Image 1 (cartoon, rainbow, N blue to C red):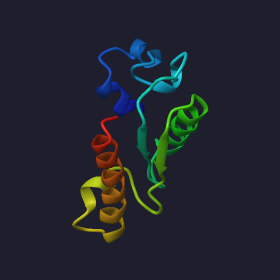
Image 2: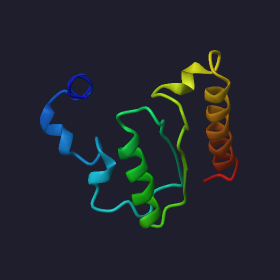
Image 3: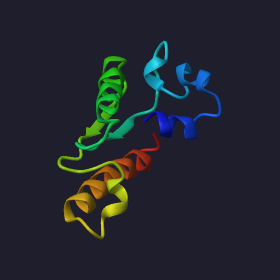
Image 4: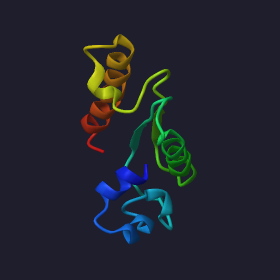
Length: 103
């Protein structure tokens, strides 16, 4: 993960900025409804789940899809995995519904 962070951030000091890690924000209240997708086999899974819980605690409408049995990046694996395809389609449908409501 350090290797990835080194490629994601121009300077390691930015790692504490809430815009890099929203869990560090003073408040998440007032954010738009959110769809959070995680995968069981993903080093970011626990942070994603914590973010979904923090959003709920802040009163934000949130749906969390846990990606049972899937790996990070499963959205791109639809041709290889029916489970990945179905899970990605479910999240996309939720996002499309949010957009249709004009949220």
